[in-house]
Amino acid sequence: SFDVTAKKLKVFKVETIGDCYMAVTGLPNPDESHAVHMARFAYQCLMGMKELIRELEAILGPGTSDLALRVGMHSGSVTAGVLRGEKSRFQLFGDTVNTASRMESTSERGRIQVSQETADLLMAAGKSHWLKPREELVVAKGKGELKTYWLDPTKKRRHTKTHKDIRVAQEIAVNNPNAGPGEAPFDDKYARLIDWNVDVLLHHLARVISCRSRSPSRGSLVNHSSEVALLPAAINDVAEVVALPPFDADSSKFRRARPDVSMLQQTRADLHEYVKRIALMYRDVPFHNFEHASHVTLCANKLLNRLINSDEYESEEALHNATFGISSDPLTHFAIVFAALIHDADHTGVPNAQLVKDKHELAVKFDNKSVAEQNSVHLGWELLMDPRFERLRKCIYQTNVERKRFRQLVINSVLATDIADRQCNEERQVKWDKAFRKKPNEDASPLQLQEDMNRRATAVIEHIIQVSDVAHTMQHWHIYRRWNERLFHEMHEAFQTGRVSVDPSTNWYIGELGFFDYYLIPLAMKLKECGVFGASGYEYISYVLKNKKEWERKGKQVVQEMVLLYKDAEEQEESSYDSDYDSDDLEYDSPGDLSSVDDEDDIDSLSEGN
Picture 1 (cartoon, rainbow, N blue to C red):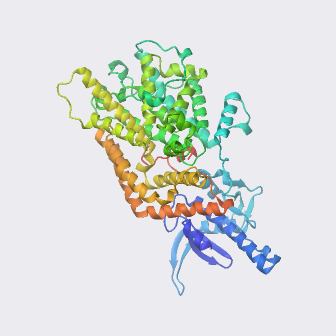
Picture 2: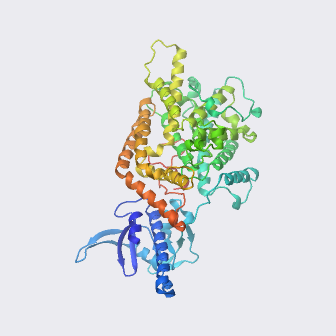
Picture 3: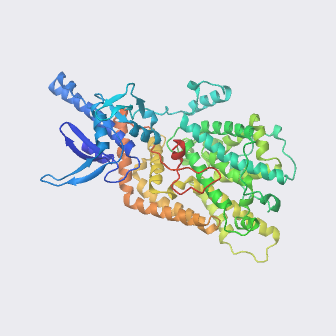
């Protein structure tokens, strides 16, 4: 039974020694999530042993209950090799093996004891809620006194929140800002995500404010105190072309200067309050949650910075023209990351098509068009219009022209993430063809040339959000796998609870291949075609092609593993896994600096503070 479990969880059985079962993860094949996999293996073995004892007790009598299993775990480097002799076998040597043995011998019956080293890896992977410090220090032979932890992988980070729960938490945050620790709606992980999103938004907003101070806005001013949230449905405000401002030589001189945010403490506080409330609007579903929104913000910010900070052009005006005016407008940059932040707010974990089929209240409200996306825009804009954010709105836009541009950019960006609506996809493809595949008119007037530039800018801005929304498919395989499993989990959970009618496992492998061929690869190719992202276009294409190839080779096995994972969770409720997944140990870029960033970036590395 242990061997079967080991094979399923990628654990390598080394040997059995007397009454001891020795296993390892990360060998012979490297595994970045070895501590998490071993923790889950240890717990399943513990549960399997308890079940066996109950069965034996019924057959052999009550004395059988004296049998028990204890487990110890330690992490570190080992020496591995094959010992020759009559019974050649694979063997491990070193202090790590000895310490693991001490963890087992000092553990207690029916419990899993882990060392500080293993606990550190689990904490870095976002599993600190699995751990409880052992009250007393453990005296281990040859090691002295050691601090250790008890492991319980069934402990949840937080309960699964309903929509009502979220609204209650929001009311606590809104009406009682000085609530005590017991009433806090966020754990440390989400607090870090909120802080990082605030930093990104503030970085771009500081540039908006800086450029406006050097080149004052022209046009009629917005009366911020009388703004209303009730506006036409977002889909009615989608713009064919969003007009960006022309090149301004004066403000462009300061565009690359790192903005000074030290004088914007009140703005930071306002942004923090706004982002906190947006975070509360995200439901606790496996994929379309606040972590996903933060990952999309990460990727959008990354693409923006590569576009803005390009050194391939001789002058700021040349860069302005090459990027169709996007590089020169800080308000556009802020609008893009703002849209990324709110784009899935209040997502139910169910596709639009199912909401329409069920005649859900949101589908009725938004006339069955881009239901989830319109709802997210509505919630994000309604919150921004709250009187307490009047000061923040004055920082974002001051004139009616700026306000219109900001709203159009947010709406176009968020609604561009509706990739399941065939009509919307066809309309976006027509827009792209007109922008980049239509033969240019050599006799066009300056006004027409400016409109053509704005059309290209609009298409690229929408494309940034679309790519960012699925950027996990254009990064390293392990990142793609992690987010793919989250999406599978979300759809499987919806199926099990009767919210969708189709079991995702029946077509997941073939469906992913089609997704690669008909959406992801063409999407990545457009990064190169538009010509504004330099080498990044080639990087994204390379990764998406590699991931497709890996999926062709491993996808069927991956699906089978995911099915078994959730089948086990259903059959044995106490060993079900929580909805948090493995984390990366990767560095995370600051909002305005990409010098240390590569395509392995994943939001988990930020959310767990690695």
